[in-house]
Image 1 (spheres, rainbow, N blue to C red):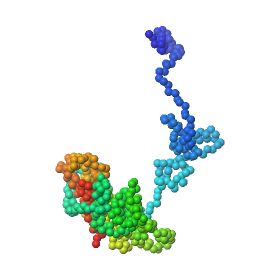
Image 2 (tube, one colour):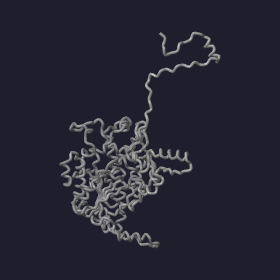
Image 3 (cartoon, rainbow, N blue to C red):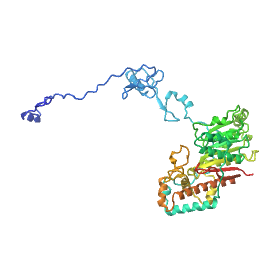
Image 4 (tube, rainbow, N blue to C red):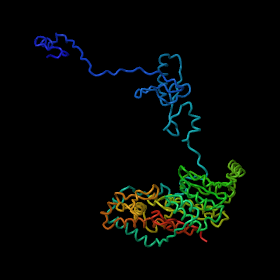
Amino acid sequence: MADSKRPLESKDPKPIIEAMAGTLEAPVLHPRNRTKRQKVQAPLPPVPDRPRQCHFFLPGKRKYCSLTARMGNKYCGEHHFMAEAEAKKTNNSDSNEEHPVRKRIPCPFDPSHTVWEDDMKPHLYKCNARPKENPSLFCKDVNLTLQPEEAPTATTGVDLLGKLSHEKLAELIQKIRDLHAKYVPEIGTSILSHSALDERKKITKNIKHAHQQASLLGHMDRLQMLSDPTTCFVEFGAGRGELSAYLKMAMDDHGSGTFVLVDRTPPRNKFDNSILGLEEIKSLVKRHTIDIKDLVLAEVPELRRDVTATQREVPVKEVTESIETNDTTDKDTKEPEYVEKKPVVAVSKHLCGGATDITLKCLTSYQESECKNSPLPSPVKGILIALCCHQLCHHYMYPNQAFLKEIGITPQEFVYLTRMSSWAVCVNPTKSADASGESKASEPAGEEEHHVEADKELDELRTHIPGLDFDAREKLGQQCKRLLDIGRVMYLRENGFDAELVYYVDKETSLENLALMAVPKQ
């Protein structure tokens, strides 16, 4: 049976010959009936009746944009180009009438957002990205031992040690072992406690941080750092300020203490209100968001004797006098009168890598500048820093460059030294469970924030150097850490401090369990 939908084929060859000759008109074929359903374009819905809703239609969602338009505009800021297009059409159709078109341009402070061109001037005054004036306590790179352009260059990389030959790496390891045996003495362990953390130990499940803070406060009490209620406690790398909060409880200062918190970025869930206290006279608490390498400690106003809990700003009289002094054109101006400062105690819990080095440089510079005029025996009353993350140290930040020259550590070897120091806190993948049989992976977050997983390079060194097993690498990492720490101790001793290294908690509490403590020499 022939298909009724297709035309019948002719068996006469004449039409074919005429078609080839071009004399036959092409037949009109009947179009095939469409089997699929045709997609009919639906009409646009009416414009939204909600006040100030954008009139831009989203064809993919079949609805109008839900953003709010500016008063008097049809489109929101995202789709304002439609208004410009409509205005251009209107201008082209009626060239006699002028219709001003608003234009959005990138903000000069931060090009990631745009601004109306005619609103640029008021925006520049309120833009959050606008550059702010540096305070008097800011001085760029003032606490760097070597300026970056003066620092010797050293190659870095993740697989840095893997590129060393067997002979050179073996030489470097033996050199570190010899230097550790020569310069690093036996380090004692002293685990103390303080009553300020007793309540926290009872109510918290994760008591490892409480044990660390209690031991640090116990050592501060032992070294007489908590005896003077007028002391200004400066917490470097403060974070949330938790250590200062318990320091406030240990002091029981009744509002007479001063707490300065220094950190590069302002964190969430800060303890600043806890440090203020609940008494009628609040403690003086100030947070400075600044990099330690740019901090001039002598210019921090909270260190002044005349800035207290009741007088929280520099006296107006002295501010006026300083302005008048700056306005004078006399070249032989007198130096500003010295203002007595409070004794300073510097504290920090787990100050990472190079931050410890620039903190020591900051404190010794402050000690040197204040000793000329201060009536105090020592402007810096004490230093207590829980050390960590030596792999983040940098050669140009390390304060005791003379010690590195003495022991013959070059900038390139310093990079190797810091790289190998991370082996001391690597987690052994073969020891997946502790003595109690519980997996270490099941510990709460934050228990061991300084654990480092054994990386691929570490595993490859097992075949690179025969006999360098996991325990040997861990011991070598500890030797690298202690070599850097003993240079810091010598630096403080050269600048008038009695400094020591103490294991303040056991390794089960924290792998980074060493603290640097210093008080002025008697």
